[in-house]
Image 1 (tube, rainbow, N blue to C red):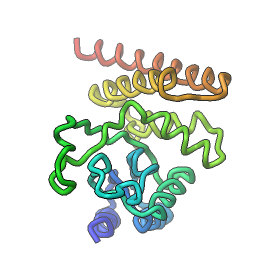
Image 2 (image 1 turned 90 degrees about the horizontal axis):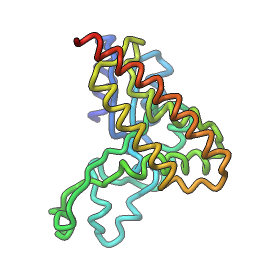
Image 3 (image 1 turned 30 degrees about the vertical axis):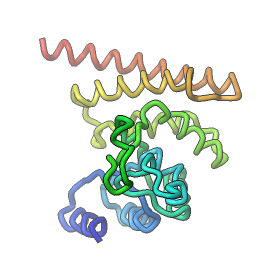
Image 4 (image 1 turned 60 degrees about the vertical axis):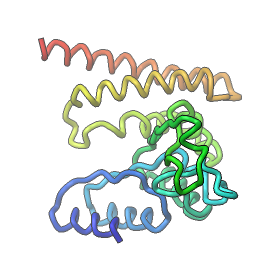
Length: 212
């Protein structure tokens, strides 16, 4: 209901909005319909909602306590389809690390959240691989360019710093977490990320000169 209200407000006001933390199939369909009607709306999903479902909670495993909660396998599959077809514009880590003590409590009392930054790239690459796509550049676009302003203006300092941190995390993931069986594909990804870093360093230099 809340998501439908958000889309209704966007359509009524003619505004632009970004929706985060998608978790169910029904909203993917609503988002698809909204974009078909020309609404200026983008959306993101967390990497763990693309891989986990309520089945992984088992007997109330607190490691799977998230907000929004993990949904059914059908919802998870709909999120994957939405990502691969372009209905969902970005993938985020929704990085919320917690101490062990925060999870050693009854499920309802445990701290919600998963540490997701370190495995973000490898999880997204797994989605692409399982979906039969080899579009490495498209993967990087969902992880990096998705945070760029949609009107084409230059990003602010906060956006540049975020992109830099994410790029470094993704480069580390390729080396340590990616487990890419094809060395050629690994080199392709590293090459794309290096080009992104060169572009980003140029943006950082420009921002520094503007603030001097």
